[in-house]
Amino acid sequence: MEEELLISECKKNNHFAQRKLYEQYVQKIFWVVIRYIENEATAEELVADCFIKCFEKINQFEYRGVGSFCGWLKKIAVNECLSHLRKKKIVYDTEEKLISDLSQSSANNALSKMAHDEIINVIRQLPEGYRMVFNLFAIEGFSHAEIATQLGISEETSRSQLHKARLALQKTIKR
Image 1 (cartoon, helix red, strand yellow):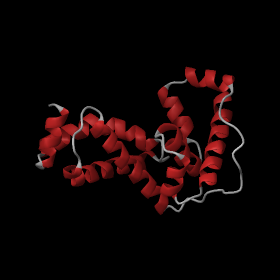
Image 2: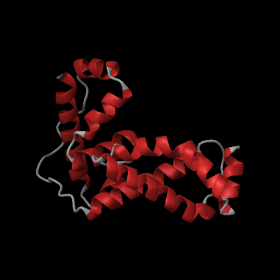
Image 3: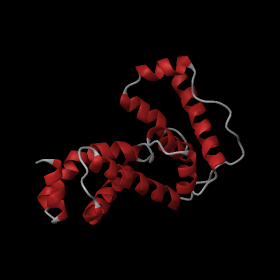
Image 4: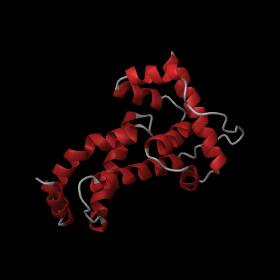
């Protein structure tokens, strides 16, 4: 079934269409969530929550072509992850300043040889605060100002957390 038709049927509360849409996107959304959530069981619960929210709010979605639904669904997933992590009251370290970017060639060469699953596992090993900022900045493309607003931290803290995440990733990848 074509995506636009599936979405149209989901808006009519067609359970067959909902199942098809779920099956089409569950893996993509799982990979988004697992970048933020360390525990796989919790990640699976959040994926289910994402789809529940998706189907509750699908009437608000307007189809704008290929990829627009996936992007909309990924935003729901990121927001669900952030909401979950906020509830856990993650503490951010505001002491350190941004020093440098992740740019060492040996780390970049090692990274290019790693499989997707290995990269995800390395990111999952980061402390939650580092992992959230890294995912939002490096993968989702948010600015430090947007991250600061979403997480209730300062822009400097966002920069600091990103720097620490990059250093930790660099160290792990070199090993």
